[in-house]
Image (cartoon, rainbow, N blue to C red; front, side, top):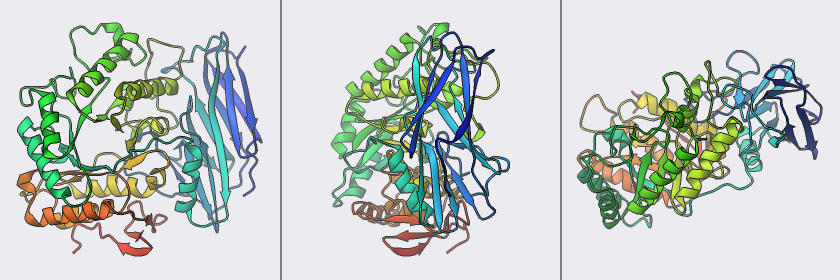
Length: 507
């Protein structure tokens, strides 16, 4: 699979004719850095194309723009739905080939692999329009390729992900504990959270681990819309953080930075999109507002921030609905038209990182390739469930298998919670949920559990305690049947093959 990374053709696309846009690259043989400069032109895209021979035996796996949605799997090259954000790996016989861009780039990059070669689309737009660079030089992306004389796609991709991220940011303590969303779904209170924190401390007793207790959506005025002040069910958020710590847990809090209905927000602080009320992250006053919100939560005593919805709030769609680019139909403009969309996202993540200080950050609905190095923990898949085990399998198992290679390379991955509602026939039987818990407990990824005291039967308590004990020890987890199914059943756990039966009628 010999491949010349410097042997490409390219085309630049601007609003109107291309007059003063310059595109150039530099290469060391395995990497290729792409640069752009423009004066009066408004660049939109750079299209690259490499010759590459596909054959019928090849299987290809791409990544996702932000979270995955149960849709990752090995496929034959070409065909519909073939856009692959950020990177891809090809398995051909006894070899693997990986190609992608380094994390933290200044553009959105997607790939397509077909019979006529490899195409990369570099999206440098600002909103839905060309970016105003005014002579500024931008390093758009650094492309990386690697050939492996190995048929093990997982091992190759794990090595490749480490090559893509120069400075991952990882938590300095194990990440286990409670998140109340998947039993409460927003219906919670001060006393409920304190009870949850005490339960988590009991479950972790004797393991050497200190659990987190994350207060998810439902604590704030306005129900996901802000302003980010407590509602009547929660009251004093500083006292709640103190009570969580007294219970023996680490307090965390959920936040949607680009949704806010404060009365002093002016129209120019909102994104210019029809019917849109989300905040414009390029506006100076919005930046100050976000810093103010986070400073307040830090002062309350929360030591972990889970920030959510930013990709959807900026671009107006979920990752599953995006194709080659993150921008769909319609006109989207920002207050600052001189930054690429990727730079706008990076600027927001850097602002949140700086405002958080020593708080840990969980990114949710964050752009995976751009949050790497700026968050310690990243939700790599869409929501699991406390009600539907099929959703937990589709979203949780799929993202754990196909993005596990990013764990420890980009961030600590979070494939999402074990949702335990209990006590109702329509909810997930424990014999099923326990399988998801057991897999997470040996994954080395974040392990969050949604469970209140009323649902914690003696059996569930025993199993959760044993899972936390397992988590306290290092393990090696590898998905084995990733070429045959999007939800692998066969896994290597510390070198021993283990089968997880995801069928709801399985014993």
